[in-house]
Length: 417
Image (cartoon, rainbow, N blue to C red; front, side, top):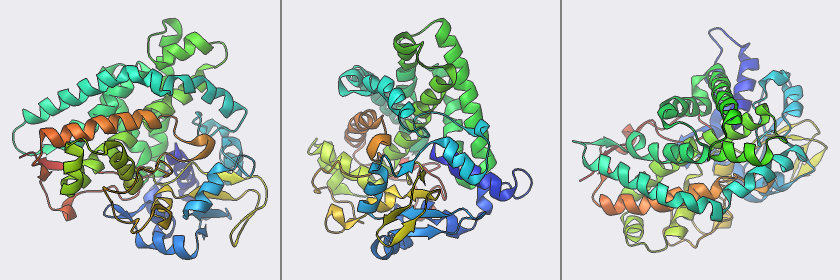
């Protein structure tokens, strides 16, 4: 849902419609935290993290906005429950947009609403409850590997392997018809790609909420066995259709594009790191290597935006009440806190779940354990089935997304043998 916020800023900056109605028209000095140099955050991120970890961003309209890049300052902001607010109403008032743009869900809610909604969802995301999906994930991965093996010539690992795994898993979890998967895959990709323009992201968000709203109406009449049905059965009188649609939309899009990007980019790393691939193939320290891949890649580049509710001082920065604060998760995860050479991936780095790939604090990703489960199944199975796989194009020809909240690829051509 982080894409909604920058999309709304873009709409205001560009006047809504017309030839300049796109976030791509915003200067790079605003968008640079979403850019990468290959798989790495741009060098400016490292310089700011070292010298100026809380920095004012040049946002128009008199909006005071800050980017936080250092690990400890990011942890401080995300862990604060009284210094900052995620309430959409406060953000809307700050940048001058209407409440009708509110996408709902956990990301733009403060306690007690956030506490109430998360309490409803949490039982569905415990390892015990998610364990029922393990055989299904293994079957999905095996089926996709069989499909890859049957293909002639290079395959697109993004489209044919990385994307279907979380798509099918989320269908299973939510009770979404699998026949609709291509539709919501497209919506998920569009909403996070800010280079396509603010209006495109907002349109995808609106369409997604409309689609989920239809599912909610259907599930109200006949609750199924998925997450929507379970919430309606257990909490039907305590959650209205709008709230339920917002929560489900967050699970759907948050668990699709992010996991797909992690699977694809992690596979790319394994193809170019034979030591790590061999350890993964042998089943050695799989959990630790998954955590290192999560830290190194940090595909969700920024956390949900916060609005300061009072004057706050972080280091040398004086943040005023009403200021917008953005935390760079990708910047924080390259901090020296993670040991020597944090800009390198190290297959022998000790498992460290304190990375920011899933955020931190009360808004930490509720689907983190589901994502880990998918990665722990997908990576070893892939490198065992195709030990000689390699990129089918030179690295310089890979098309990384230039300004997307969720970093990723448009395609990943691979030779399997």
